[in-house]
Length: 288
Image (cartoon, rainbow, N blue to C red):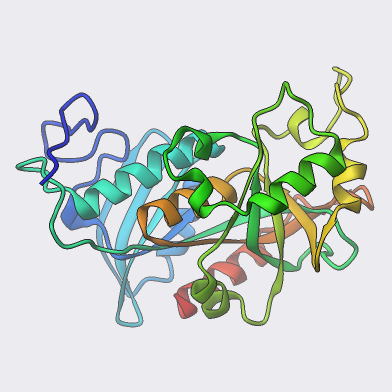
């Protein structure tokens, strides 16, 4: 069996994993993820009982039970780089023996649903709607650092997209991945299903201009007009692609569902979206 060196997987003195600071026994097989640590507290407010709570940096974790299901609510912070940290450490918690550092013989599959907020790019994704990331396009490049990237990516989709938007060679090579099909149907059977872009940032990388002009000011208009078969790009966020891609590479079930809080086409936004995200969390808790 493979033994993971100390330099590759750092385990804290208390037996917890390096960044998340949680121990293997504190992790449930069903995980609801979100960017905001405060939303973990909101999610746990619906639990029938709380088993443990851990706070480390932006990573806030609460494990408890909801209607007989053991669930972990966990915040991953903002951005695809954080997803690389979180998914790798969650997989290690489930599939590495922290005492011997050996990869466990029997694989444990995790179910991970990210609940987030997003900006819509199509008229059929109005503010307040829920969009499931059936497919995601990663602008971040995270998956490109892992062997097997092409085995989980939609290569024809990638090439068509790069050609349509005149993809800049200065950007990371985009990758296209599917969320777990069964989980998409389980959680989002009555929701809008679409293609989500995971950007590397919130402002310029998503086509927003504040004081610095954009290098590719027409990129968003090209994105909005792109079609691949029946697929169109529905929304922007920052984490769905690395979650789906790393989940597939590791053998876990993973997907993202977002409430739309801005419509980029209409130039509208809603900063008071607490009610919609609360309802979405309740729905995911019931269906996971």
